[in-house]
Amino acid sequence: MKISVLTIGASMLLAASAAAQSPKTTYKFDFGPGKTAAGYQQVLPTATYSDATGYGFDFGTTVTGTDRGGKDALKSDFVTSRQPFYFSVKLPEGNYNVTVTLGDTKGPSSTFLKAESRRLLLETTATKPGQFTTQTFTLNVKSRRISDTETVSLKPRELHKLDWDDRLTLEFDGANPCLAALEITPAPTATTIFLAGNSTVVNQDDEPWAAWGQMLPRFLKPGVAVANHAESGLTLGSFLSSKRLTKVLSVMKPGDYLFIEFGHNDQKDKGENDGAWKSYSERLHLFVQEVRKKGGIPVIVTSTSRRTFGADGKIENSLGDFPAAARKVAEEEKVPLIDLNAMSAKFYEALGVEESKKALVHYPANTYPNQPEPLADNTHFNPYGAYELAKCVVEGIKTNKLGLVKFLKNDTLTFDPAKPDALASWIWIDSPRSAVTKPDGN
Image (cartoon, rainbow, N blue to C red; front, side):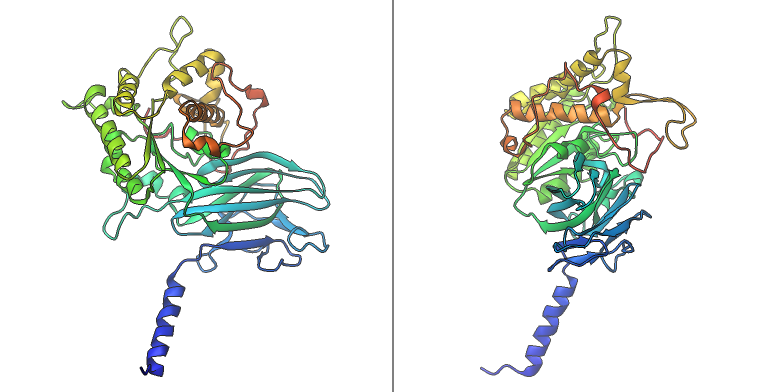
């Protein structure tokens, strides 16, 4: 059979065109002005993010480079900054294994690492001169696209969230973060924990607001990613109508999880068919059944308590029948239940009436830029409160003996919300972005 040169040429052009259109998903970066390690892309301090290059230092943050010299090209140089800095890589939707190498051959380093929208990955990690640490995380990059004709309906405040842009962004904080190398590879077989919920679950972009969903990655080993689809102000109904459940189901694999926590905003729905025992319960059943059709594992999480103390120093239930309804649906559907409502009440009571304010957004005026008035919110957590609630969720994973237990980090100790971590011994390094506007919902 004869094949013409024109046919071969056309095939080559089509292949080249397809390759050009396929987004790059694997990267190996060597940071600093020194020698470049074999197989790595050098990243100088001047590498500002652009769509053309697909990577670089982002959002106006800058770094300096240091070359210590030596035989090890990968570890002999690094970039650092006295201010938090962002590094972004353009990536299509999916899960990725992200490996960072931190350290300095001749000096100490100290790094606090978050992913976009302040997902906590690594608490303060120090290295001595000549010491390096290599840390790997499995991270999710999401897209609002569902199909050629469907997209997730985002709120205006979400349009500029790092969670929904077209790239993965890492935020490097700490006294002296020394970034030597970064590798990114696709992780298509990783387990995904999808999160459906409201402002107590969502990845909050701005200080001092926080939620347990963005703290959960800190407790997980590589091999499992958290895909947080929660958003402030949502109910089970609005999660459905904005096509967020459709989105989750479109990318869910058998063996993935969906953690479902609603109630704060659902109790404000006052229609004839609304209420804990009607639309709320019916929709919870629907979520569970749809996830099971995909081979996923649904987990019901009761709503976090509000900080509503009674005269006896105990938390009074402000969520009506919604926690009880969630428990009943979990029992009827025979799905795992994480009773965050009960655990968060124990947490507040253990801290006490005044100290519990330090787990929520209670701050004097002028604590943050453009904040002339005090902040006093008894629903939304600050980073400390969100971190403690994430520990409660981890305890729920253990109690229910979920398959996720094998992915919990070795330093994940047993946590009792009646004996919370001392705030004085807990360290959080603020991100550059802050906001005084209260998230939607209450």
